[in-house]
Length: 263
Image 1 (cartoon, rainbow, N blue to C red):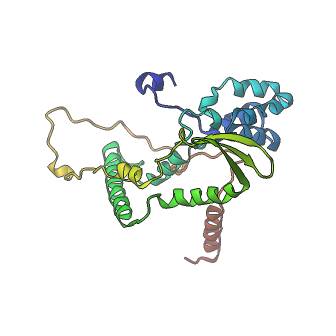
Image 2: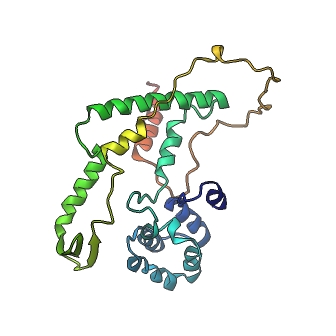
Image 3: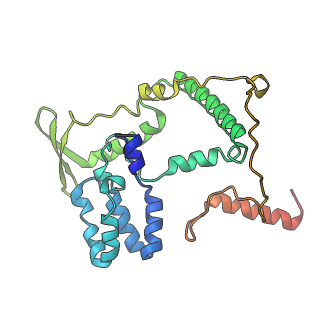
């Protein structure tokens, strides 16, 4: 984290909640009660709700002290500095990227970088075409999420105070919050932001046969020793981590086909 602060000054650094809980579980053990308390604290959008961590302190003081020692801005939603724009708690973005480059990451370094460049160039072009054909101002997936929030907002009762300030009351729990519309605005899901993200061109290049030749000594790869067993491409899963039903069904189909000698 000190390297991030030194090189990327001002960039917010967060921990993946799933990996954080995995480390927590290895040190203090798991269980539904402790897991739910930790997840509830991380997802709390205001400090008063986060203070329910006191229940964890009563249950396991050592575990509570371990979590409190971690800066809240790194894993608790209410303390995020750029929360209005991003409230992600899991590292799913990098997990998705890692699975996308599965075919390319086993290649030698230059071939791998070329595979990623070619894939990114094609993906950017495809997304630009979709953006041109899309008529709306808010992008489709954020719009679905926004529609769900709008539907749930029917349970909240706003009372206008002055200017852009409102007192909003939850109809069932009677919780109250002050909302100032002038301080919180979001443009990251709109068409302009999407266009700014994918409008850049990833320049196509010629093949290696047209690359300039270097006068330096040829750089050879290190001596490769083939390890025993089948090489593993998927990430290592925790002992209690669930495997998706699609993978299980695919595995069962392969077992059935091997038994009946059919393809």
